Length: 460
Ligand code: 5AD
Ligand code: SF4
Image (cartoon, rainbow, N blue to C red; front, side, top):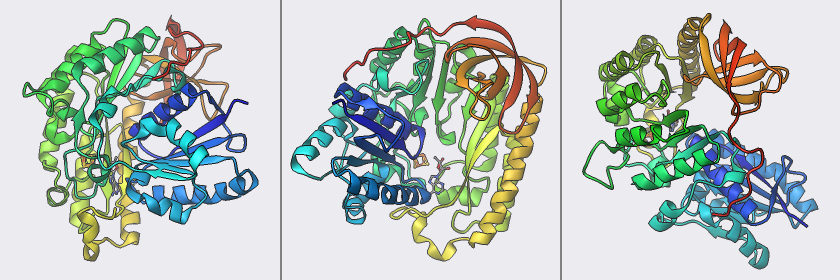
């Protein structure tokens, strides 16, 4: 009988993309997806360790799965991803009902490890380093497993060479490795052939893409131009650039290549120069704002989003006030705001005596939320009355009678439309705005989805 699998993802886009790869491998191995853990023969939890609550979520989830495993001993449970990479043997010590643990460097072994564990019993396989050939040869194209048939993530680089004091990523994901230029371009070409109209180029620090493979810089701007010129591609996005490495060439490519979307996700982390220095971010609040102003000057109608951490060790009221000031001046379209979470082994986690009182952090977090919401509402309200191009995502989550689409600025628009399939392109007049989405009236359908309804499974 065909085995059924579920992959649950806790974490960032890189993790979601890894989950698609895992799903692709399991499907290539003959399994079928299911939505419910009750029906599944294999459950893979793909984890993140960037903030602490991911740990709690994982162990909470594993707790729930324990009784399921007791009822059905044949059920296989695997834990993958950053937390697996970091915690290694601890996972099976805390949750002995886990059958397979694998990390970020051996995602490609997902199906094999499950088979081996079925025959030999539990396996923990964590590689210390990326095996270059595996990482680079491994296609991120496993079509049947993608959540979306019209949009795809494309990894251009793995790992990170920075050393932000709060961040565990370099320790877990290892040094930066860029995928060869031609491999990335070829992958996007193949995706377009399969009907993909939108790609997001993924890396921890995309602006340093290519630093390890060529002295000819900056390669990232060139990559944007090359990918953006592929026939049939409608939208190119990327995430995330590091402010210190954001170069004029990248901004020019954004301004000049029509397919590159008008959206910049530029993580601020803090507005205080003192905190930024302690974080080793390599820029000041002023420098950040200058880069942002240059990007806005060059790219008309640029939407800007960010990441901000509240309560970094030693953050004073003055430091935080500066974060509010810079955030207000940056006038973000939206922001991911995080409470600082000490990650064992990172520099900042040792500054225990400087940890900020949780009540103070909670109060600052709320003040930041208000500032972000104010600019988000204003940015959205300014779009009312305009006609925007959207790519349809599917029924709106909250109201399935409505359809959701994304604008080039990555804003979600809900509108009434009968029978528009995901991947269709339409114009919508914006009629209303909230802090997190827009509402609109359908004007015209510009293009139908190009992908076939069912794409055959292609093994990697
Ligand atoms: N605590 C809180 N937020 C963090 N981030 C990374 N590490 C931590 C941490 N230890 C946030 C940063 C980063 C985003 C992906 O996660 O803002 O840009
Ligand atoms: Fe972490 Fe900094 Fe690297 Fe981003 S650039 S992954 S925050 S170390």
